[in-house]
Image 1 (cartoon, helix red, strand yellow):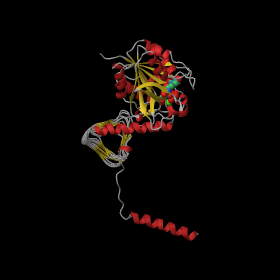
Image 2: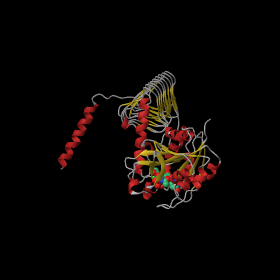
Image 3: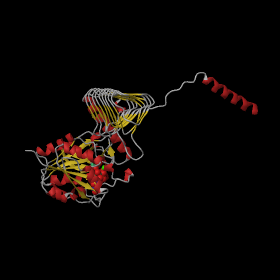
Image 4: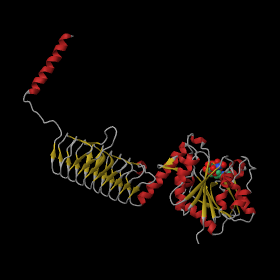
Length: 453
Ligand code: UD1
Ligand code: CA
């Protein structure tokens, strides 16, 4: 039988040290608010019900934390009176009755679902409280896990600890799972008689033990339990997230030449045998299929790259860019809301926006789809196996047929039928010997100016 679990996410902190106009849990990591990372891990660990304990930006935090496939509610903690008080703010949800109550923090975004599951497994085995601990490189400021005869007997906050207790490096992450049947009665026994005058959730360890409860601690890697208090810590969390995700992707068969220079979004999908060259940035919503290559210094967002396609170097794919199999988008090209058909080539210095480019078509260097009239956007449709000569301007709305040719330097304002050749430029004139006349006139002018001085 699977046990039910309520996740209580503490997110009422005031974020002072972030020096931000918004709650810190709304700050993004890999383009996704921190709180949504936490919720994603909670969901991945099989939980379906959650309550967010919110303070500032309550509505925005609730919205960002409300993810698919979960029932998420929120309660407002109006005064910040400690972690024990914060959990009790969610009293009504806890009273609904769950086997387990997980307490986790909105500003600890890298925790993995496996860690939640490991703590819950302890309750399934008969524990009443399972605290998630870690071995700290520098334990200063953390609650210390005090062990006696192999049992966790108390968590002591830095300010309340003796010198001896401060030497302990096994620390409290703040995350724990509590027996849902007994949680409320234990939480209600927490008082605020301590150095900070706060209601410490950590007191639950001694309270539960005094009532015959079984308390255990499990271990998780420190990096996973890192919190966020400052912008510098936010950047460090981003770096750790990126390192972890690149590593996961490489293990699934993605090649990266210089992984430390590749920036992924929370939802970047890279299939096996994709090659990512150095200095590539993925914004949200990108999928790259098997065998595609993203060359150096490219920026992709909201784009789909089919198998065997190549992008860059120095290419920009904006939302709605959809590259077919084996398509090529080369250096200094920008593609927005446009389909580039299978095997089509957009190789150099080009803007393709609000367009459809058929399979096998070649777009010459410097081609521009003029999609905007200053008010509205218009579409350019180019058929299959067409050829657009270099430096052409295609003034939308306009359609170019299958197999059609557009002469270099054309400004195309009218549709071009299948297999037609269109010129949209002045006819060339050649004047024999005329260059000499022009040159002599210029030289004479220069000489007369010199004589004047
Ligand atoms: C807490 C733990 C400490 C642990 C540390 C890990 C207690 C008493 N101490 O300390 O043992 O080592 O976390 O980082 O639990 N929050 C609220 N409302 C409140 C108070 C806190 O929502 O009234 C939230 C904060 O936003 C934060 C989390 O709870 O996400 C922890 O609060 P914080 O003040 O950072 O706890 P610490 O004193 O660091
Ligand atoms: Ca903290």
